[in-house]
Length: 391
Image (cartoon, rainbow, N blue to C red):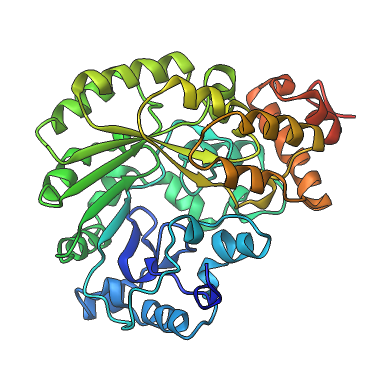
């Protein structure tokens, strides 16, 4: 990457857009921090959701080489510490636009809501109602907005899917989506999309888009999953992206509340239905230990993303012995991102990251009655953890 490409430019601000229907939020790309939709303004300016003054300001900042604040958590901070960000991974620092106006996005990410049965180790209240319920019942994690509740979170927790679908805001957002006439791809996520009763209706409305992708963790009842897929079988441009990076005990730790056997059964249902599938893998310090086994077990295409927020879950926040062992294992494999992964693992971690990881991991495991013994002894010793307690 040349020096000119490093000046805080990202073409995703001009081509990608994410909408959280449940929380009435927009994201200028799938890795950016969100903004609340100004509904009264949108009523007065229909068709302008992808060209709000805030979005145009952010695009202008990028054209001028000014760091956009909504990119801080997931991209700028990672890059400052020598880690790979989504911007670098996607090579979106390549300049493709010079105008702040974009008629409509090419890629639209629709976040249906947070309804989800799982509390994945790197997830949070924003994308999982089970995570939100855990915090409501058991209290906060650390001093982090991801693991504490706001008044808005508590209100959302009480509102049903049916109630949201009847609001004026819901219909206004759907109307804005229908105005996007240059879409090349729509990505639907949650929560767990297959827990949404309106999923098939929404996809039927978007059937004209060349490519539709549903992200699923497969953490759903197999009968419901089969029935939902049957409603979608006529959509020929539909693809399924499966969130997963571990097998067996590591899977059940990091994808808590789904069993490994249920994952495999739902995967087989997908295969028999003959939907095109791929795996979406999140690389963190908790998922890295079972990653190689997962890659060897499945032949389907795999894409990956880096967990950089919160920073204590980044893949480099590990003890030296674990790092050495992982690097030695990876050196023998032909993973497409092997060299970048090794480079990231080698980065030094801070004392705060170590202590935050210890607090988080202990609390996460205690609340779910999970055994930390699946992780290397050297890691647990480094964190001062033993037998699911601080020593």
